[in-house]
Length: 587
Ligand code: OXD
Ligand code: MN
Image (cartoon, rainbow, N blue to C red):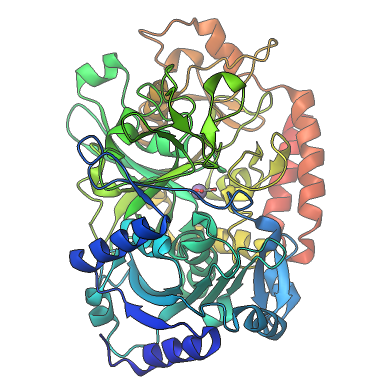
């Protein structure tokens, strides 16, 4: 399929190491996908679902010990430990190659190695990047086809260039003790072994488009961010674009596909989804910041997806979708998950493959069960989704899951303060990553698990990017929190589609149409500027949601000081200055 010597050598070397029976190049053709699907059905790797109700859809179950990203087994492998920084697991590059070579040695014996050429971003665009993933998993092949642009066209675009990310994946024995997700940013390489879970093995996503790409962006003067991108269309047809970072499982996919509440909808407001997880951001020729979504599909969390939380996602997963670790309804050969509706199937199998009794109290779908669906299925996919130049950003939004401290929304004073606001993001942990649920953790820009280099240098890079953009072209920065709790532990803000009201305020600020009140932490909305028409809540509730509790923020300052300490002298002094300003504002 190619005469690119570097590609051929990469494949040859991997072949020598992993010793597959066969090598199959994924050309992107329907015939080949159909053949591989048939084979995966025969071996039980996937189940074909009801083709009338869910055409083109498949169900897959992972091993029970392999259901989420494994951050403690994820490594940044560089020559110097210092370059990985204090927030990444580090392994010496040579040691990592040696250790993993032993595990990869013969790992594909008796299996086929698939060669997947893929493009992150529109094929051939100067803003796109190419990867080659070698894998022994058909499940990976079928998912990569949805999540990225795959096939011969990619190799054509690559030509004889050496500029591609070398990804090597083997399920091996799916052994937990020998599971490693290793990144070699200095070599443009990713080695992943002993997992079959999407986040660990679809190497285009977190591994390449965030960890490797963040490093590439630092070298080349652009940014790879863990952000959704949406377009907010106003009644006059004008569309303003927002990129937003939230830690895992804060409803990013829901926000990206939001349907405005009735009052807004009738006036002509719409939200268009450009991306739900990753944004690559560059300065465009007009001096503004532009964002592209390098992915081609959505890898969304199934539980909680329903006709209220995200009708667009529900429509998206009706065809050509792969479901992983959800409930299998045997009566009509469809799927179900907690939070889909109030009617769990009676004749069903749970995510582990066992018969499931909904009244048992056991969950039928894994909390981190997923759908992999083509972006183009989405009813609100943006017309700019395939625009190789991306969309111009008016606002950058940070958010997290905070019970008390953060108000519903506030605006940063300027770029530098905005970077500070992003750097102090915090949230409670969820099921998307293995480990404890419900612990508060700091997660700057939602990039803590995804930054491929020293986080202090990452903050520096953000500050440097700001210096390249003229003030009148800079997007504005905001922080949102949909998750504030009342004294009974109930959410105060209704969330979901109603978040439109906050986006509305954000865009009004970007357009200079509303004032704000100065507060110690930044600019707060005047309560009357949050539109509550049609909402079952009073302006007093908005006041409550916008309250800044000085004592809680003083504690926050302590937490930030502690968090910052680990970055040592690689923490930009601008951020320390911002912390001082916050402290003195609170005093
Ligand atoms: C995800 C995540 O997108 O964990 O899967 O952030
Ligand atoms: Mn994510």
